[in-house]
Amino acid sequence: MNLSLLSRYAFFVFCVLFTLASLPFLSLHEWLWPFTLLAGVLSLIGIGDLLQTRHAVRRNYPILGNIRYLVEGIRPEIRQYLLEGDAEQLPFSRAQRSLVYARAKNEGSDKPFGTLSDVYQNGFEFISHSMRPAPLSDPCSFRVEIGGPQCSQPYSASLFNISAMSFGSLSANAIRALNQGAKLGEFYHDTGEGSISPYHREHGGDLVWELGSGYFGCRASDGRFDPERFAVQAASPQVKMIEIKLSQGAKPGHGGILPKHKVTQEIANTRGVPMGEDCISPSRHSAFSTPIELLQFIAQLRELSGGKPVGFKFCLGHPWEFMGIVKAMLQTGILPDFIVVDGKEGGTGAAPLEFTDHLGVPLREGLLFVHNTLVGSNLRDKIRLGASGKIVSAFDIARVLAIGADWANSARGFMFAIGCIQSQSCHTNKCPTGVATQDPLRQRALVVEDKAQRVYNFHRNTLKALAEMLAAAGLDHPSQIDAKHLVQRMSATEIKLFAQQHVFLAPGELLSGNIEGEFYERMWRMARADSFDPAAA
Image (cartoon, rainbow, N blue to C red; front, side, top):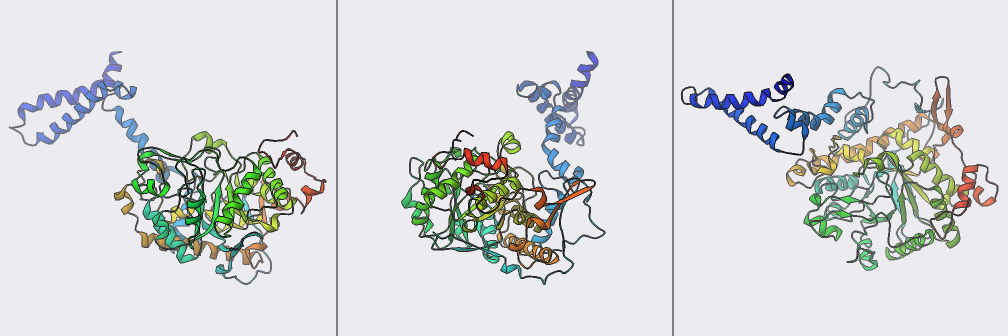
């Protein structure tokens, strides 16, 4: 007991006694001042530790107990810079981040002395190459025409674009840099659900306006959708497409949250929300409640926007719900121009741990299901598919193209390009690089002109790497890549093509009544055009 007390309070007692004992000698020995001052400050900290009631460790170990919280506070940085291996993905590996940094800075990303990857580890993936490589294609030609038969203003999109990140979540300078980079590289910048800010408009880069359940930028006083305000915003030549956000990979089914300490006056003005309150997007839309109503809303937005492409983004959840939307397409004849599938591995938005870890379908399975359902209903050729979720390299793009995507989006990849160091402090307003903060001093560190060039470089160099990979595989264009070109190791002695691993439906198979896969057949029977609720299986 006595030894325990000694170990717990000895340092605190020493600081107090030293302070008191040294006071009479300060006038005689000037060198004592720094030591007395330090001991005095530590004594006050110790007294505060004893009087506070929130932390038991500090009450039991005055002064010394604070070391625990100090070390805990810098633990992520210690792990990231000193302990983390190059291949540990938490959530992005050092190798992935280094690749983005190098390409953004126009530095060589070539690696000497062979791969660091274990090519015999289960899950290892690669592209098979051709004995007769194709001539290198111009990456500038890697574009996708988006706009179905009901669209009068189709848009030619780059194969690689900036995924949804809102002003408010990101700083003004981050938005400026992203949009200027998009302008330089002729690719699009998704606004995120936080509406179109003045910083999105400053450099004139192409915008995809994301419309979330909060209807920011076209919001009535009661929080519902305002058609007139929407029409005014959508008429801007800079807005190329409209994207309805049904859910996002980081927190599907949860809605969006911007903490009140990040809601500045300009964010409030941009979104049309009050100051001093958390800005919360509802978990569901008020403009529709069934698959048919969703499609009617899409038709309304297309008309109000003057015929621009309108689609939706979602993270796959209940499979029958998406199939219900497809049945509603067949029933009403209304088609979205595009669909963006977000994988649960997407993650720019802060979310409860359970949502981040245990809700939503990963990108590969979600994308494949959406692609198959559209193929099986004879709609795939009329609707373009985008994919987003942890995409930062040319191989990441090739992988999603091989299983059904027409193009890819990246959020965190472009965040790395403008300086993000994965400190994972986005929700605290204390981002150390000025990317995800509304603190004017912190975001001042992000120099727009420099970072915009890095955004452009990252996009250009990634597509250049993709062109080189495709040429090695004997392909002239990304649209030619297929599931037979991708390979995955299944065990120490077996590898399989993606085409062997996954089920691919034949055109019209869902409509034929002869569906081979039991899962697809059961989900199709459960799907309803008039409700998101399942029918009896």
